[in-house]
Every structure is written in C-alpha cells, then in structure tokens.
Length: 66
Image (cartoon, rainbow, N blue to C red; front, side, top):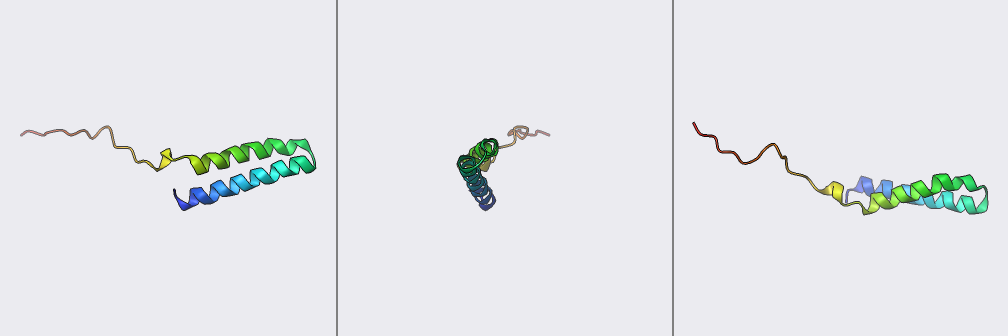
C-alpha cells in the first residue's frame, strides 16, 4: 500500500466520522457529506487492485523471421 493512499484514506475516514458525529449533534444534512467520505476512506484503505501492474496485451511473444 502506498503512503499517499494510506494518508488520504485516513483523512477521508476521519472526516467522514467527524461529519457523522456532527450529524448527531446538530443538523441532519451533514450525513450527506459524512457517509460518502466514510465509504471513500474505507475503499481507499481496502482497495488492493490498484497496486497490481497489468501486462501489456499488445506485446505478445512473437518470433521475427528474416
């Protein structure tokens, strides 16, 4: 996991939790900001498929004959 994804995931996760707590303490529309930020933070922390490098499909093993 790259450091930038870890930092951004934690920032989004903490911001989502903060907005959800604000929803409980004040107005309900903070929930519209809190839930997507929370989901995005969890997704950034748990997504492993971006770390894989795919092989190029146009470079198949070809034999060049002269």
